Image 1 (cartoon, rainbow, N blue to C red):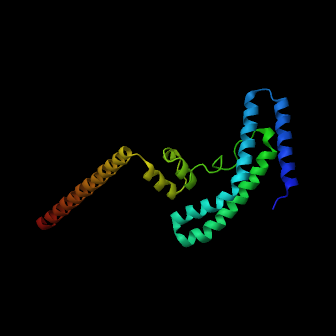
Image 2: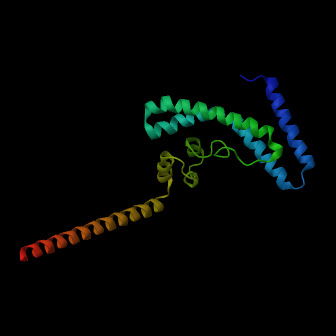
Image 3: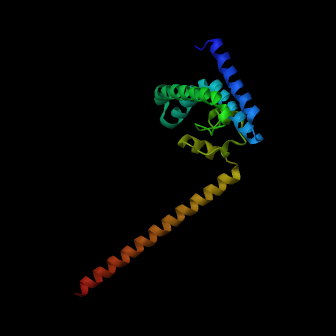
Length: 184
Protein backbone atom coordinates (compact mmCIF):
# COMPACT_ATOMS: atom_id res chain seq x y z
CA UNK A 1 0.00 0.00 0.00
CA UNK A 2 1.27 3.45 0.85
CA UNK A 3 4.31 3.76 3.09
CA UNK A 4 4.23 5.72 6.30
CA UNK A 5 6.82 8.09 4.90
CA UNK A 6 4.61 8.91 1.88
CA UNK A 7 1.62 9.59 4.14
CA UNK A 8 3.72 11.79 6.41
CA UNK A 9 5.08 13.70 3.42
CA UNK A 10 1.58 14.17 2.01
CA UNK A 11 0.22 15.48 5.30
CA UNK A 12 3.29 17.67 5.77
CA UNK A 13 2.96 19.19 2.30
CA UNK A 14 -0.75 19.75 2.87
CA UNK A 15 -0.16 21.44 6.22
CA UNK A 16 2.65 23.60 4.81
CA UNK A 17 0.45 24.63 1.93
CA UNK A 18 -2.40 25.35 4.32
CA UNK A 19 -0.17 27.41 6.60
CA UNK A 20 1.24 29.36 3.66
CA UNK A 21 -2.31 30.23 2.64
CA UNK A 22 -3.13 31.27 6.20
CA UNK A 23 -0.04 33.48 6.31
CA UNK A 24 -0.98 35.37 3.18
CA UNK A 25 -4.78 35.26 3.46
CA UNK A 26 -6.47 38.62 3.17
CA UNK A 27 -9.82 37.45 4.49
CA UNK A 28 -11.26 34.71 6.63
CA UNK A 29 -13.24 33.51 3.60
CA UNK A 30 -10.03 32.39 1.88
CA UNK A 31 -8.98 30.49 4.99
CA UNK A 32 -12.41 28.91 5.26
CA UNK A 33 -12.33 27.77 1.61
CA UNK A 34 -8.87 26.31 2.10
CA UNK A 35 -9.81 24.49 5.29
CA UNK A 36 -12.98 23.16 3.67
CA UNK A 37 -10.99 21.86 0.71
CA UNK A 38 -8.41 20.27 3.03
CA UNK A 39 -11.22 18.58 4.98
CA UNK A 40 -12.80 17.32 1.76
CA UNK A 41 -9.47 15.90 0.65
CA UNK A 42 -8.82 14.09 3.92
CA UNK A 43 -12.42 12.82 3.96
CA UNK A 44 -12.09 11.55 0.41
CA UNK A 45 -8.83 9.78 1.21
CA UNK A 46 -10.14 8.14 4.37
CA UNK A 47 -13.52 7.11 2.98
CA UNK A 48 -12.53 5.95 -0.51
CA UNK A 49 -12.72 2.24 0.48
CA UNK A 50 -16.39 2.71 1.44
CA UNK A 51 -17.24 3.31 -2.22
CA UNK A 52 -17.03 -0.46 -2.85
CA UNK A 53 -19.80 -1.66 -0.50
CA UNK A 54 -21.88 1.45 -1.18
CA UNK A 55 -21.84 0.85 -4.94
CA UNK A 56 -22.49 -2.86 -4.54
CA UNK A 57 -25.58 -1.98 -2.52
CA UNK A 58 -26.76 0.71 -4.96
CA UNK A 59 -26.38 -1.52 -8.02
CA UNK A 60 -27.98 -4.47 -6.21
CA UNK A 61 -31.02 -2.35 -5.37
CA UNK A 62 -31.34 -1.04 -8.93
CA UNK A 63 -30.41 -4.04 -11.04
CA UNK A 64 -30.33 -7.18 -8.87
CA UNK A 65 -27.93 -9.37 -6.92
CA UNK A 66 -25.70 -10.55 -9.76
CA UNK A 67 -25.21 -7.05 -11.13
CA UNK A 68 -24.44 -5.81 -7.62
CA UNK A 69 -21.82 -8.51 -7.09
CA UNK A 70 -20.10 -7.93 -10.43
CA UNK A 71 -20.73 -4.47 -11.84
CA UNK A 72 -21.25 -2.95 -8.39
CA UNK A 73 -17.84 -4.18 -7.25
CA UNK A 74 -16.08 -2.86 -10.35
CA UNK A 75 -17.91 0.47 -10.16
CA UNK A 76 -17.06 0.72 -6.44
CA UNK A 77 -13.38 0.02 -7.08
CA UNK A 78 -13.25 2.64 -9.83
CA UNK A 79 -15.07 5.25 -7.77
CA UNK A 80 -12.89 4.45 -4.73
CA UNK A 81 -9.70 4.98 -6.72
CA UNK A 82 -11.17 8.16 -8.21
CA UNK A 83 -12.18 9.47 -4.79
CA UNK A 84 -8.71 8.72 -3.38
CA UNK A 85 -7.05 10.52 -6.30
CA UNK A 86 -9.31 13.53 -5.88
CA UNK A 87 -8.55 13.45 -2.14
CA UNK A 88 -4.82 13.64 -2.79
CA UNK A 89 -5.34 16.48 -5.29
CA UNK A 90 -7.53 18.45 -2.86
CA UNK A 91 -5.08 18.05 0.03
CA UNK A 92 -2.14 19.17 -2.10
CA UNK A 93 -4.01 22.12 -3.66
CA UNK A 94 -5.90 23.21 -0.54
CA UNK A 95 -4.21 26.66 -0.42
CA UNK A 96 -6.06 27.50 -3.63
CA UNK A 97 -9.50 27.00 -2.06
CA UNK A 98 -11.02 25.31 -5.15
CA UNK A 99 -14.63 24.27 -5.61
CA UNK A 100 -15.53 20.58 -5.16
CA UNK A 101 -14.39 18.35 -7.99
CA UNK A 102 -16.73 15.41 -7.46
CA UNK A 103 -20.24 15.02 -6.12
CA UNK A 104 -21.22 14.52 -3.41
CA UNK A 105 -18.86 17.13 -1.99
CA UNK A 106 -18.18 15.08 1.13
CA UNK A 107 -18.04 11.30 1.13
CA UNK A 108 -21.00 9.33 2.46
CA UNK A 109 -23.50 12.14 1.79
CA UNK A 110 -26.67 10.20 1.07
CA UNK A 111 -26.81 6.47 0.42
CA UNK A 112 -27.17 3.50 2.75
CA UNK A 113 -24.78 4.72 5.47
CA UNK A 114 -26.68 7.99 5.82
CA UNK A 115 -29.93 6.02 5.99
CA UNK A 116 -28.64 4.15 9.01
CA UNK A 117 -27.25 7.12 10.93
CA UNK A 118 -29.59 9.97 9.89
CA UNK A 119 -33.06 8.50 9.30
CA UNK A 120 -34.88 11.75 10.11
CA UNK A 121 -33.12 13.81 7.42
CA UNK A 122 -32.48 11.26 4.72
CA UNK A 123 -35.31 12.39 2.46
CA UNK A 124 -33.83 15.87 2.15
CA UNK A 125 -30.97 14.56 -0.03
CA UNK A 126 -31.53 15.19 -3.75
CA UNK A 127 -32.10 11.91 -5.64
CA UNK A 128 -29.41 10.82 -8.04
CA UNK A 129 -30.69 7.38 -9.01
CA UNK A 130 -33.90 5.39 -9.03
CA UNK A 131 -32.80 3.71 -5.81
CA UNK A 132 -32.57 7.10 -4.10
CA UNK A 133 -36.00 8.10 -5.37
CA UNK A 134 -37.47 4.94 -3.83
CA UNK A 135 -35.47 5.58 -0.64
CA UNK A 136 -36.75 9.14 -0.43
CA UNK A 137 -40.35 8.02 -0.99
CA UNK A 138 -40.09 5.42 1.77
CA UNK A 139 -38.61 7.95 4.21
CA UNK A 140 -41.31 10.60 3.89
CA UNK A 141 -43.54 11.25 6.87
CA UNK A 142 -47.02 9.73 6.72
CA UNK A 143 -48.78 13.04 5.95
CA UNK A 144 -46.58 13.61 2.89
CA UNK A 145 -47.18 10.07 1.70
CA UNK A 146 -50.95 10.53 2.05
CA UNK A 147 -50.82 13.84 0.14
CA UNK A 148 -48.78 12.23 -2.62
CA UNK A 149 -51.23 9.32 -2.81
CA UNK A 150 -54.15 11.77 -3.06
CA UNK A 151 -52.38 13.69 -5.84
CA UNK A 152 -51.68 10.47 -7.74
CA UNK A 153 -55.30 9.37 -7.34
CA UNK A 154 -56.56 12.76 -8.57
CA UNK A 155 -54.25 12.62 -11.60
CA UNK A 156 -55.38 9.08 -12.38
CA UNK A 157 -59.06 10.09 -12.08
CA UNK A 158 -58.45 13.07 -14.37
CA UNK A 159 -56.77 10.86 -16.97
CA UNK A 160 -59.64 8.35 -16.79
CA UNK A 161 -62.22 11.15 -17.13
CA UNK A 162 -60.37 12.61 -20.14
CA UNK A 163 -60.14 9.17 -21.75
CA UNK A 164 -63.86 8.60 -21.12
CA UNK A 165 -64.75 11.97 -22.68
CA UNK A 166 -62.51 11.25 -25.66
CA UNK A 167 -64.18 7.86 -26.14
CA UNK A 168 -67.64 9.49 -25.95
CA UNK A 169 -66.60 12.14 -28.49
CA UNK A 170 -65.21 9.47 -30.81
CA UNK A 171 -68.42 7.45 -30.50
CA UNK A 172 -70.55 10.55 -31.22
CA UNK A 173 -68.41 11.39 -34.26
CA UNK A 174 -68.71 7.82 -35.52
CA UNK A 175 -72.48 7.88 -35.01
CA UNK A 176 -72.75 11.20 -36.87
CA UNK A 177 -70.63 9.79 -39.67
CA UNK A 178 -72.82 6.67 -39.91
CA UNK A 179 -75.97 8.84 -39.88
CA UNK A 180 -74.58 10.99 -42.68
CA UNK A 181 -73.67 7.89 -44.68
CA UNK A 182 -77.16 6.42 -44.08
CA UNK A 183 -78.83 9.61 -45.28
CA UNK A 184 -76.86 9.63 -48.52
